[in-house]
Length: 224
Length: 267
Image (cartoon, rainbow over all chains, first blue to last red; front, side, top):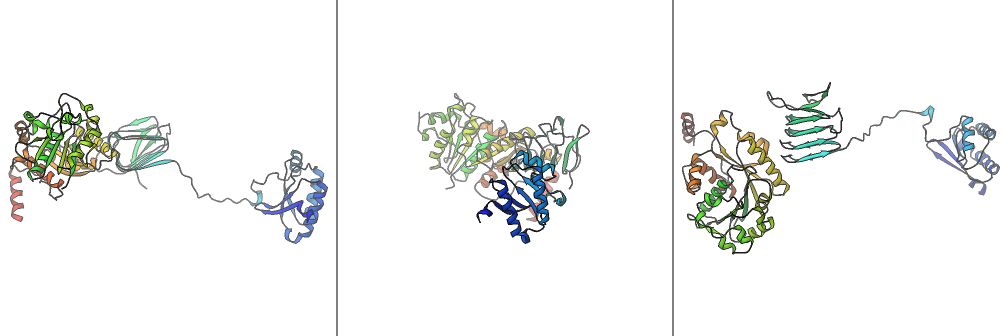
C-alpha cells in the first residue's frame, strides 16, 4: 500500500488525473506502472493528465512514458508540473500543460441563457416637483414624473406613467441611451449632450421612446 | 370627540389659505363642535382680520410659546360663535420665533379640550411651513386652477409626503365654471391628473368672498353664497359625511336654470 500512496488516481472532468508525489522519480514511475497494470481494466481507454509536481523530466523520458501508457490503452494528453523544464518538454511533445482549457476535439457550444442584466434603480411613486433622482445606471419609474422633478441617469430612463419633468439619459455621454414613457411630455429631455424640448402635442398621448438618430433627438411610438 | 388637527397650506401665496381656514373653522363651529384656529403666519398675520377679531388681540402665539401668558389667555373667543377660538400670530416677530416642537407641544395641550384644531400655514416651504405641518393629523393643500399654483401645490404635496404627513387632501379654490367650459381654465380633472391626491372640495369664484373678508364675516355664514356652500361641504366631508360635489354648471343663464329645473323635477 505504501507504494500506492506515491501515486494517486482521480477522475476529473477532463479525464483521469494522476498525481505523483515528490519522491524519487524512478520509484514513482515504477509505482505508476504497477498501479496501471493492476487497474488496467478500469483505466482502459482513459485520457490521462499527469501531475508530476516538482520533478524535472527530460523529453525522452516523457516520450517513453507516453509510449508505455499507450501500450496499455491509455492516452496521455496533459502533463502538469511546477517545473518549467518539464512544462517545456511536455509542450515539445505536443502535450498540454494546463487543463483548464477546453479539450479541443470535444468542444461543444452551450448557449448561455443566464443574463446578468445591468444596474438600475426602480422607483414606485409619484415624483413631484422638487424631487430628484441621480443614478449612474438605468432609472425606472412606476408612477408620474411631474414638472419640476429631475431625473439624471447614466443609462436609460423608463417611466410607466406621465413624464413631464426634466430627464437626462446617458448623462455620462452614452449616445445609445433611450427615454421611454407612457406619455412622453418632458419639460426638457436630454440624451448624452443633446437637448430637446417637447413640441405641442396633437391628439391623445401614446407611449413613446426617444433616442438619438443622426445626431438628433427623435421620438417615436413605443411599441413592443 | 374627533380630535383632529388640520393644517391648511398651499406653497404659493394668495390662493386662499386664510379664507379657507376661517370658513372651514366657522362651518365646523356652526355644527356645534369646539374649534380652535391657530394663525401660524407669524409676521404676516391675517386670520384675525378675516374672522373680524383683530381688535381683540391681547396675547399671541409667540407669547404662549415664550411663556408670557397661559394658552387660555391667548385664545380669543369668536364674537358670533362661542365655541370658536383663535390663537393669533405675532405681528412684530418672524417665523423663527417658534419651532416645530413648540407647535407640537402647544397643539397637544389643545387636543384635550377641543374637537378640531385648524392651523393656517404661511406661504412658502421654509420654517413657517414646517412649523405649521409639524402637529398636523391631516394636511389640506389649497390651490387655484392656475399652472403656477398647481406646480407649487405639487411641490408642497411632495414635501408633506416626505414629512410623513401625507397623503394630503386637496381643495380647488376660485374655479370659474364658464372659463373651464370654454377650456380657458384648468378643469378639476386636469388638476387631479397632475396632483393625484384626494379632492375634498371645489370652491367656485365668488365676489361675495371679498366682501365677507373685508367685513370680517366668513362667507359660510351667508346661506345663499355658492362659495359658502362649498366650504360647508368641505367641513361635512372632514366630519366623515359623504357630500356630492356642487354641480359646476353655472347657476345663471337659461341652460343652467333649465337643467336645475329638470333635476329637481326628476327627484
